[in-house]
Length: 486
Image (tube, rainbow, N blue to C red; front, side, top):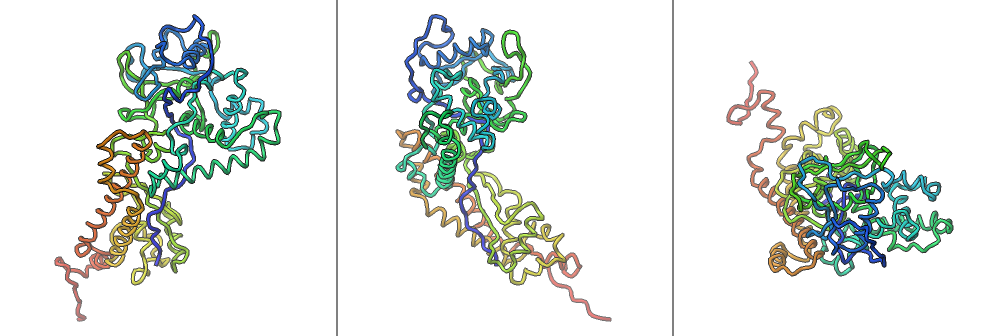
């Protein structure tokens, strides 16, 4: 029969969605810089000079003015945008002209445009960002670069000791996969682009530097603009995330003033919430991400359980005697040899998961359903239990997989909850506790679903019974009707 690929780790997903991770002030790059008397009094003078100078630069470039309803300020997350007046829902809070956007177009127009033309977009933007950072005062983006943190709490920056706290989690395997991927891309671009072009890269770029750039893009880039799959927007990327925001349609590309006498495309951000003066402006980074995704991309998680998730990975084994038939059926219905199902805490099983499980478990006396004569109907058959043996096998294998996965964690849920109650934990340990506790809760939920299903096996209606009913060969009490010849 087919192998039910236990529960394995989720795919490594390298993408750059709408995102920001807030730097704390001790992370801000310090730079000796005098702040002249022209600095706006609207900004809290206790904010680091790098931020003050960035704000002044935005004013001088016409990006912000007295009409701008937000300003940088101290917030619980560290640095964020605060309303300077009452703001209504859907009010425009900032606009950033296209000439300040950091994206593949900006790379193409730069000195390194030609040599980066064949690279993956994120790699070309990462090299552009690094080059601007090393140019220092000669960079036109120097005041923006100065406010970028040296890192975030993303798990890609965790030490080996810190990573032990997420032992057994899917987050750990994803993190290690991402780190391996980024390292391999660095070695490749170092050999093919950086070292052969010393005139364009007259400074040493290390693996740590490349990871810094990757982390900045992963945590700060927007990707929901028209024709923009990866774009960093200085000033806009200071805005923080809040679970209170339940929509994602706050950013758009529009025509607007790009200077005193010019018009161009601008990045426009609207407030998804009504705010009073002095309150922080928030957006929603991504409604679909799990807490593990949030930890990897942004360096924080949400305390509620809505983002607790576990990815169930199922695959059709090549050693299955019905491999070709099952693969054909899966592909005909939108799946493949491997299928990934994201299961969230408190929610029902994903659409198609039970059907795929039943397909994997088909064999023995049920194998006749794999014949070509049933090819156009079998997916409909799989919507309901096929046989007791098939359903029982599914329950047994899934529960065994949950048990195996739960045994891989260093702590129990009870131990995690005790640590959480005690408090006094670092931000990274708090994230680790939250993610591993969330994964374990989802695994327990999956186990409970199939445990309960095992108790229902004797009461379910299976394919043969349904077929006999369709043929009129089963009575109201479930007894088989025998017709005697006349």
